Image (cartoon, rainbow, N blue to C red; front, side, top):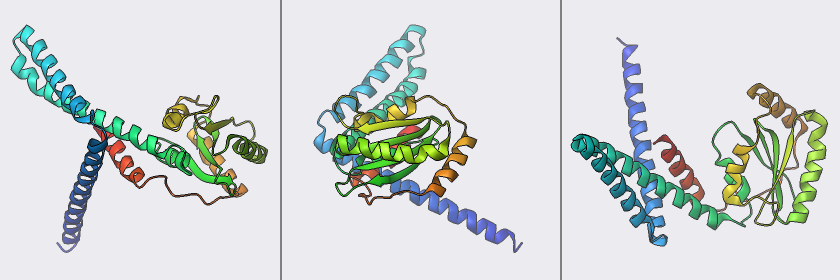
Length: 243
């Protein structure tokens, strides 16, 4: 009996912590929604339109087979999911627009990626806050630079030469974040990374991470994030994905 009581108390505490975390996440999403609604006048009409359209389609399709009242709840659920997705995408776009051009923005975007990515921010940089971030993933190694293009390209070249000695035949990709020709806009960085071909296995990633950790880095001090809203957006994005 004595052994069962701690387990019961621990489970109760875990449930309480989970409820508190869920409540905090909902409050955070609500704050982001209010902030986005104030500066995005099209948000509410688009969300309402998505719900109305989904309900109308479900009801109309149901009428054909005389199942309109059965399909109506499904239409409502689909409409709410579509509305929430619209909110998440527009809020994400807004945050990226505010972050663009700020030091550390590319590192912040990389840090918000989902999936098997090992991000090491600021492996090289300078006093101008130009920086190179190293990412290990299924494509191999991706060196992502942000800052002045000519200075960043030099930093990437130095870093590539440095790590090529220890990674063998592993592909090394170079990405410069920006809006000029040949660069990747901040808002498209995550999509660009996920479209790179898969060249190595998860086991290879582990091996690479250990070898590069032993190599060390010329770490540069960068801002922890371009916007306070960055942390909020991560919670919003994850919630949207769960739904």
